[in-house]
Image (tube, rainbow, N blue to C red; front, side, top):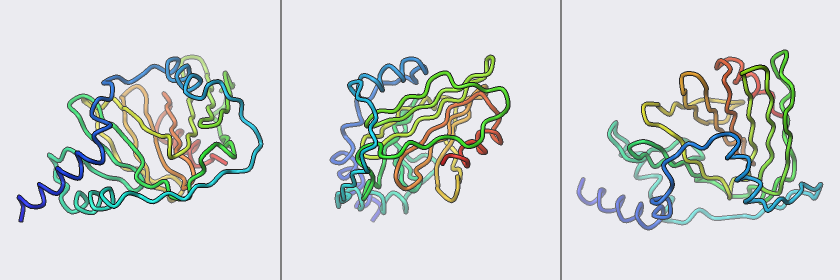
Length: 214
């Protein structure tokens, strides 16, 4: 039975997620991330067009894979799942992708903004494009970098060499965080978009900012 399940997982995994095999092994700097976002969006300016919703079905092989892996997760497993996200763990990084894009907006139809910021932080850049919207705030050496991204176009490549991915709950939505010791990354799916907050602030402050995204 174990051999059969292993074969099913291997075949489904290879077929569905082989595109992630050649992802780069690097956690990009903030400035590089912003330049790449602008490049991939071709500099397209954000407009007030209503949300474009496209119904998408998760391929049957992906559904099968999620169910099987949910039952077979072990401490040494190569892949694991949090609701809305899939993870492929490598030796020094983890590739993250969405597992549920049904009814998700295809473009940024509404830009979320933080309703809470700690005292002293000032906006450095606020940008919105078709596929992403970003807010960057600074106070001295401290930074708050917020990204909103369309679910169908989301993929992440996170440095997890020596760091762990932890489950978190933000406004009733499951997500994850990575503690880099001197900074932290929070990522979650609010049902329509993927959000991430990278900051040097303590966890409690980042969670307040995340909870206040409106």
